[in-house]
Image (spheres, rainbow over the protein chains, first blue to last red):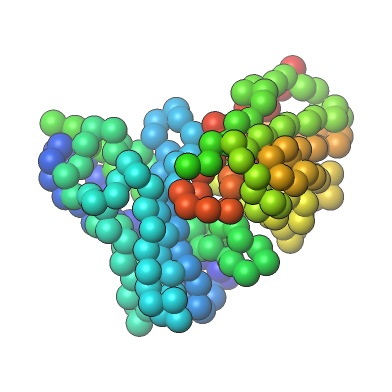
Amino acid sequence: EVRLVESGGGLVQPGRSLRISCVASGFTFSDHYMDWVRQAPGKGLEWVGRIRNRANSYTTEYAASVKGRFTISRDDSENSLYLHMNSLQTEDTAFYYCARYSGSTRRSMDVWGKGTTVTVSS
Amino acid sequence: DIQMTQSPSSLSASVGDRVTITCRASQSISTYLNWYQQRPGTAPKLLIYTASNLQSEVPSRFSGSGSGTDFTLTIISLQPEDFATYYCQQSYSSPRTFGQGTKVEIK
């Protein structure tokens, strides 16, 4: 079964850091680009960023709202994806999903995890 | 950045109705447009990729069309499990923006 499982969310104070994780199973993780998408309470979906695969030098791209504060990384040996979040702000409070990107002809996020909650509050 | 605008923001419909949701991009995105369904309390689910291709295991009552800047998601014969929020998303360029969502509610 193809699966993504996020973990590591929680309550964090403004200005602090947090790392959330996503573990993949049931497919060749190393072949795929991976995305993070978030959803603030009662709001719509916001794309956070992407990391490409080894063949594409693990390059990353980010939404303007998180660029310079968030870093996406991966460990293909552990089938794991990470989102390192620094200088957290209250507006970063959201449900964070990892998603598998299926490129070439599909260019879509075809597998999603159930998500993890990040709450930024003092 | 490419802005994605969906209409309507919400709609009420009955089981068996035909529903159409539109999505407009602020510039041409060819057919690099995806549709996702999100039921309350669950993760989004891919329905349609590259404007008109049905994701595997998605019922054939869902269809997508369009190219350039104007796109449509159609649900023929709405079923109880289709009451959800639908999002379009462009995969043409970064940032990979979503529309604001269309909530389909029971009339």
